[in-house]
Image 1 (cartoon, protein in one colour):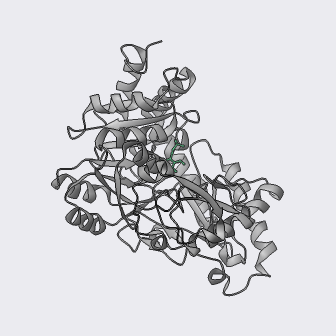
Image 2 (image 1 turned 135 degrees about the vertical axis):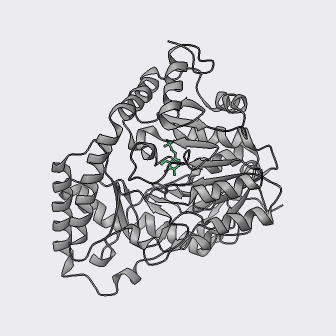
Length: 434
Ligand SMILES: Cc1ncc(COP(=O)(O)O)c(C=O)c1O
């Protein structure tokens, strides 16, 4: 049944059909999620010591890529909505400034869309990046469906990005772990991508996963627009009904007042529950335990739901009914200034001076210390609430009181924190002072 590392038969045919359907020159099937694609994209474009420009709200797999490649991050800040505690995309002007300040960079990496479905102006950014002679890598893990409906945001490949990584398992019908890496143009060599993928993928990929990529591609190529039409209709119906529930708001594109929030994927529903006097983790627990609804992503102020072509009108009725019940239970107890009483964690507060590269920090001698003594030390661990998987502490970065307070708060209200060697978070690993 062909060989993923040297495809000449059915895998080659399936990848060629995928390239055609998604609009790439070459497509590579991934059996280890977008994680493998992002690792390979960084390994194929950066050597040890090379700089890569990227927003601070990247997924943890991107940091793993920096550790493996030995690349040096030039972090830029995404636009941040402080009312909703939401980090969006990076603005074109932010990328232009970073390119001007770091002309020796070797690549730019964007996350678009974010987990919340907010998209950057990838087209303008691609032009800027290409004018500097660099390749643009886009983590489009949440946007595999974009190419198949005109009402969805423009896909990163249409916007001329060079390397695009998509979790076909998130919004399309592939099995969990099945993803794709797409390549176009001549800024990144197909050989280099293939070699990098051979560093990070199994020599025994699961053929059910690979076949599911082909099936998901065929479904979109033959019926994509009609199926996504239905998903968009369901999502728009849910959006307008939820927006009418007193105490709840839904993230909409009319909030796109910043250049880092260029477009919104309408199939993502981010419901802001802070107006009910509860945080998103508490709301998630109630919905899950009592009301038969499990959200994709709970956060401090909101819950995010993904509507796909797998959903039915009954699903939407159940979601709206559950949110109505949740709102009724809490409306009377809601305080008028609740939103302000929930903690926010501005992404800018993560912007610390790193004295170590992620790779050097990963390999540096480390010691365990009580979390209260860890403040002002350099983290040896990558600690991140999951989902969304955006690291709060990353190897080599300064540990701040604000970061610890935030992690502790998320843990106290039932969020999952990953990457910390002490699951109770009483201790952290820090780099041993020279
Ligand atoms: C923005 C983003 N990028 C990359 C990934 C990694 O994708 P995968 O789980 O397919 O490895 C995720 C996973 O949630 C993600 O949210």
